[in-house]
Image 1 (cartoon, helix red, strand yellow):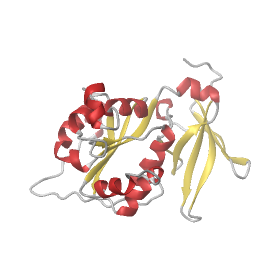
Image 2 (cartoon, helix red, strand yellow):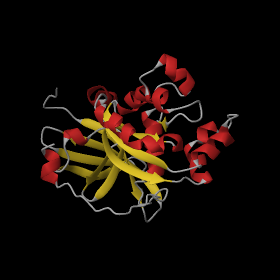
Image 3 (cartoon, one colour):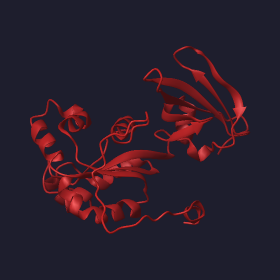
Length: 253
């Protein structure tokens, strides 16, 4: 799979809280010795000289992942060159799985489908979106005739946003969802989520981004890497306790 001279390149972003802006770097990883180096893209200068960093591994390197290098939290937003895209492009991705108000009563069934499809749920949050938050999510639909109805529906009750991880996650999740209109999905993709959990083109059970770039943007709305909290968690708990799964148990499956 790799030669001694392999070097993988990524575009990485770091949120600078002092300047309130994102800084972009070229991140280079050398699997032969586990070393990394970073270049400041804007200022065209070396940010981190090639240094061995044992906490970073090849399996951590995929677009959409968040990594930490010497206490700096970085988001991998793109491949740095065609070689890296070709070698690692089929590796794991992260995407947004959004369960809409109409399907929330069946959230358990939907989570089972997600897990059985081979995804890992890495983050989850229940919330009620404000109109502004909904507008940020559906900014690309502003010119559509159903835009106001869409905002009214998505803010009508609780939703669940999940960050899911898997091989080719963006495309795989979209395929699992099926056609956007549930009435079309029922004859054309009868095993899809929208065919079995949705009702029409608006109340269609769930949402997923169309591309890796869109997935990164939408995940940032719900699970910001800049230190913000995103939409407030609306989940309420009663008569419950906390269960912590320790690392060795997770590693053992």
